[in-house]
Amino acid sequence: MGPQFIISAEDARALAGAAFIDATWFMPASGQSGRDAFAASHIAGAVFFDLDAVADLTSPLPHMAPGSATLSRWMAANAIEPGRTMIVYGQNGNFAATRVWWTLRRFGLSPLILDGGMAAWEAAGGAMEAGAPKLDAAASGPDLHLINDDAMRWNDVLHHIEAGDALIVDARSPGRFAGTEPEPRAGLSSGHMPGAVNLPAGRLLGGDGRFLQGEALEALLPTHDRQRRIICTCGSGVTAATLHAGFTAAGFKDVWLYDGSWTEWAGRGDLPIVKS
Image (cartoon, rainbow, N blue to C red):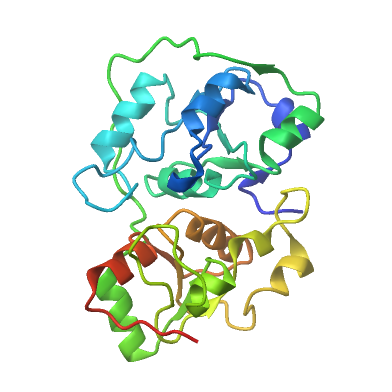
């Protein structure tokens, strides 16, 4: 039996009344737009979650976690009620679907991740469409409250580094982690936080884009100590959510996400950076 928050395309097709949320997002330098990809093709009836717009726009950092008012407005605009089954997916290997899953669950919601993303849905014969969704927006948004604040700040991460009491797991590529490859954001030094370990987010997925489960997943994680505090980080808090999902699926109880991630850490200029 797989993790309770991951659903197969076959099981998703059998659900009535589910709200499908397209979380497609591309790196800024790619020249691609998630919104354009959604307009071109998406799961029938799906709505689009713009990671850069449904965010804390007061922060200078990209796509930081939104507050309750911002998320409530998005849900009202897309006619999604909190009690409705929500299924999040992406068009590029669920690259950002885990980030939206993490965002929603912080407010006590119980979203599911479509295993294998839109490709799996199409392969299962699921209905597709193009263009803008047809919605009857709600008059007002739900009364949301932050239930699970598992977003960590840079000073908290620094505290744990100095105390040596947490495992920091970095989802970026080995080259960026080691400081031998440049960061995609111009002017940002590569490298990693002292004591961090590298686990590229893509390693948690099989060749078909589906999440590893059971022994295959546990082989990648330090499952001998499930009570240890885990801090997931990446470039800007997106693929760190894939690590968060993996550790959560494996039964870890104390899992956090460093929201500002490497963009904030290296961008500050006053925090320790290791290159090796």
